[in-house]
Length: 128
Image 1 (spheres, rainbow, N blue to C red):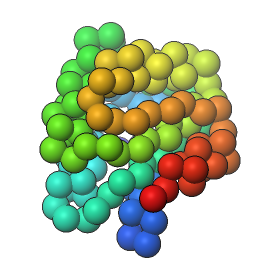
Image 2: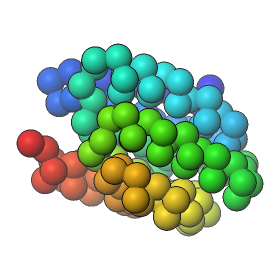
Image 3: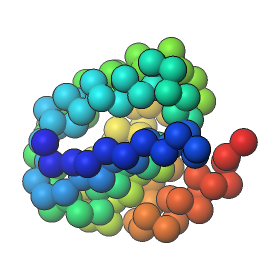
Image 4: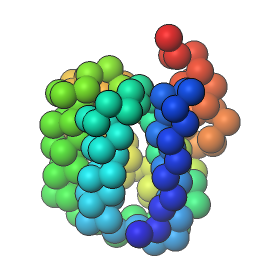
């Protein structure tokens, strides 16, 4: 899959960096690993999903809704996760924004940024 995952236990932060061409199916499948960190006592409270190196996401509106439903299921079990999503490409930003509208009421606090630095500043402001 076109991503790398890092978990920083001291920050309780999961960082996933995507690159190249990404499919909706790959994003959905990547949730299995994220679910492990969120539900198996890892204590994740903060997520950075960095799509700044993504050329494009090949997906449909239906797949975006499916991904959002999966995220809602996870956030019902682990509420109040803060997620900074980085998307510098306009088309990727638009797809992420569509996903955000589906998960807004799920207990997942999401903000979308154009740069990683902006996302990290926002997450640091929400650390408890």
